[in-house]
Amino acid sequence: MKTALLLSGGMDSIAIAFWKRPALTVTVDYGQLASKAEIRASEAVCAVLNIEHHIVRADLSSLGSGDLAGSRPLGIAPVPEWWPFRNQMLITLAAMKLVPLGCDRLMIGCLKTDGFHADGTSRFIEAASDLLEMQEGSLTLVAPAIGLTAPELIKAAKVPLDVLAWAHSCHTSDFACGDCNGCRKHYETFSQLGLPPY
Image: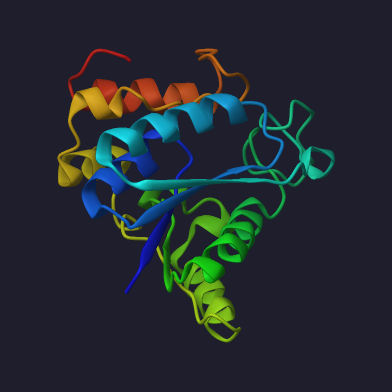
């Protein structure tokens, strides 16, 4: 089985990369504000772990909303960084890249705490996997950390601090703003682990 990982360059996907050591990773630049930093973090981690890294670029910024797009969130947004159908879009773009590369399994970094997003639930992962499997390529989608919080994942993965320190979590910039939900989660996770903020 040839496994790939959707690698955003954030703490969760970096921890999964270290933990599960996929054959390759895919980072998607879909027009999000922090795309350059996410790619930079992903490339650095893949170089350290000697994992093949692919980048997919598809500028969908005109379809975005909220912090990730630098615009006002839609009224139905559960959080300021919500982007309509984001995980569905990421999975589809990654799958389009992976099928020709002979991958038959794709990992995504959803956690237990992502359940307030419809596309961060086990139900969504199962439905998306069923949809991928019924098509040519028979790709399977899995979320190996769906039952864990971020600190639990980092502990389970035993990811060293020098690898985790590459993580970029900010939603609004290529440099940590310190105020968005991504930055707050990053600092809270490090605090819960008893580590200084990186």
